[in-house]
Length: 317
Ligand code: BDR
Ligand code: CA
Image (cartoon, rainbow, N blue to C red; front, side, top):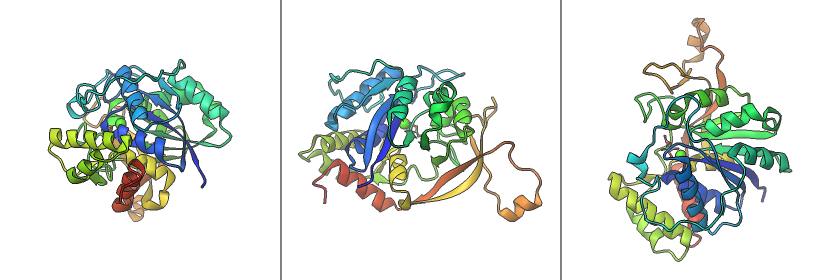
């Protein structure tokens, strides 16, 4: 099996946890490391949560580094109203004894990418602060990135604001740097984010599994369904990880995209030029200096769901 060498950038985060579990357990992924960023909650809490998820996955020694403590320009704006006071469902899980890597997130990114014999796929599922700083600090190393498959943005509605998705809205300047970097980008955004979900019945089957990864995931999903009164509950960020390894399960379209960094009501919007070609030919005005971004517009929901369930719980049938 051809393995994809991957680095995750996370703000764990309930749905980040589903993504980390999958990336640590799936045999087609060589998870080189994880970098943490301020986002859903404070970066120190993100680190603590991520280490706990690696425990649940019974993962080997995967380096986890602490990154940016706040966005490039604006203030931190946490999403604890969604993810809980500890950013990961307030399940009361004991702290991990794993050690955080002594390097900063951007140093770890540099060392892992430089040291990898294969090109590396970056999967940021959080605000893009670490990735923007890394691209600016180490542009030569950045050339060795195969591509970035990120969770963020939307071609339609937002969630943090009517038009902006949380990860981009939390640090629009960082997102603008990443989108315009020239590294090939696939955007797994809100157009599809909510679609693959797990029901409360499935969560309770996971909880009763003999595998710690499944027990943990089932507990997390169940707690969330209770809190948010939504079933099925989206697997969220996990979708970006699958899009990086099984692109055949996803339908994408190329769009010109610009990130709005103004201070107006559209701040954090990923403005996508979705006009028909005939209209683009007719009208002379396009977006100024757009990035060419591959955007996920559809997916095989059942295949994506089953892949997660069977990876998290080997006995799933
Ligand atoms: C994104 O924001 C976070 O709350 C989720 O973890 C996801 O990365 C969705 O907008
Ligand atoms: Ca996230």
